[in-house]
Length: 306
Image (tube, rainbow, N blue to C red; front, side, top):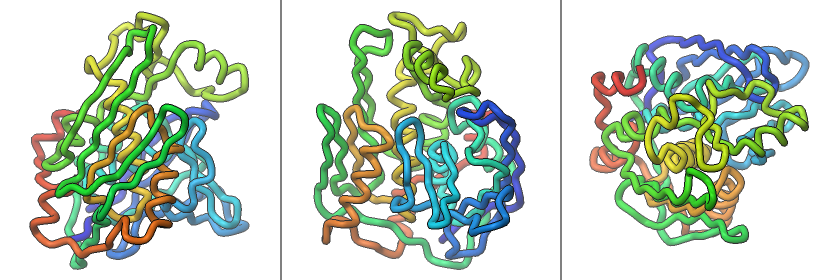
C-alpha cells in the first residue's frame, strides 16, 4: 500500500548555502501523486518540481532538481532519504526559498517530525523497481553499481587517507526500520580545507559545527566528535538512499558504492533507465513489502531520532 502523512508538518531551519532562514511544510498528498516540491515564493511560472532523477541539474555540493521553467530546489537528499526510509509514497514539500533547510546535517529532524505525526496507508497498490541485472558506472577510482537482490541493501566504502576518517565500510539491509536506527542521525562531513574553499566562493554560508562533522587532519573539530565511529560512511549511505529515491519508486536490489557521490548515483539511475532490461516495474505484494525500507516501523524507533 502507498503511504502519506496523517497531517501537515511545518519545519524552520537554515539554508546551508544561503545561511538564511528556510521554511518548509510537508503536506499529505493523494494516492498516486508521488513526491513533489512546490516553491511558494514563486508565482509567475510553474513552481512545481517532481522528485525525479531526470530533473537533477546539479550534484556538485548537494542534489538540485530543476523544472522546465527554471525553478529549482537544492539540498533535497536528506529529506528524500527520510521519506524513502519511512516508506512515504506521496507528499508535497512546500518551501519559501531555493533550498531545503540543512537542520543538523542529517535526516534526524525530518524523521522525528514524520514519526511524530504518523503515516496513513492509502487504498492504492505501491510499486517497486526490481533490479534484473548488474549495472555499473565509474568516474576515476570511484564507482557505483546496482545488482539483483531480494531486499534493498546499501554497501558503501570510503577511504580518506591521512585523516581521522581513514577507511570506513558498511553494509546494511534497509528493512524493518533500519534507516531510523542506523542512518538517520548521521551528519554530513567535510574537510576543513573544503570548508574554507567554499566560504571563499560564497558557498556554505550557513555551515557550522552544528550541522556538519568537520575533519581537520587527524581530528574532528566538533567538540562532541562523531555520533558513531563510522558516521562518515553511514552519511554517504544516507545520501545514496535519498538520491536513489528519485527513481520514483523503491528499488529492490543492492546498491554498492566506492567513493560514490550524488553525481555518480544519478548517473547510475540515468544508465539504468536507458538500458533495457535493467529495471522492472512491479506491483508490491506482501512479501515484497516486507523487504522494503519503511517496513516494520515501530513507535519505539522514535527514541533513536528524538
